[in-house]
Image 1 (spheres, rainbow, N blue to C red):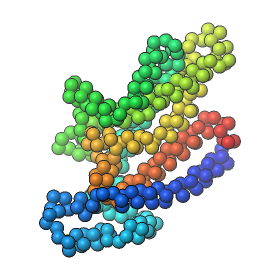
Image 2 (spheres, rainbow, N blue to C red):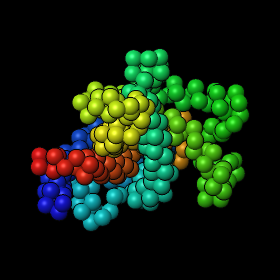
Image 3 (cartoon, rainbow, N blue to C red):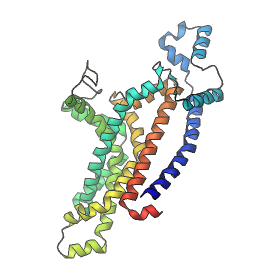
Image 4 (cartoon, rainbow, N blue to C red):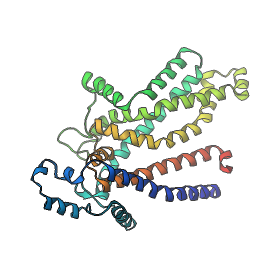
Length: 326
């Protein structure tokens, strides 16, 4: 195990070492070319009261008076020393903004991963067990609709149904009004988490249903499954016992590899539901051309996506020994 795992880690770390600087340089270039003036965004409604001298002082204080390549080189130097810089939007160290909001985002993404994996795998196995009949057609149609549905449309639909119509769940924030997430009890926090997590889980549920169904259906057509069926095994048992073992590894690998899509979807979910995570901070940083915070969030996102893909590769090799020799 150690041999293939060590080779995999070295290969992925080498890839990360050249990918990170390229991604950071590309994002910094896009932020520098954005038509948003960070000084105007920082001043806000008092922009008319700020004269040229004050603008120059603000630019000097935030390091905005230097050319873009020089600012990027300075940022890389700070990164090497463990300093992510200071956010213009929040007027706080970027590391403080990240650590203060990462917990909310990771909780949301983790719950969405679990929800979409449980629902997607279960429906995929059920569709395979009933292939060719109406449950199979209904589940496949549901998966296609989920895959094609825009995230904001799903969010508005859930709010209209469960928050406005039935009044079962709150549609905003991570805690009841007047309380922070730390002050609210566990039950209240879970109630506020359900709708954002359900919205975000849609990103991976549809593709996972179709993938699990295809893998399980292929197994049910194999000689081994036909032999078991000839000895009295029912399709449901075949799908949920040996079929589950056959589909679990690939489904887990595919699902973990979609971590990047979930992080992208979290920006929308956090914005719609006012969830105090990194997705909401990303929107505010983009509107304010806050390069230090955007770069810090992008760096953290790339590392999380890297870890998700690495976990997918390791899981696939643990569950399928043939891949270890690849």
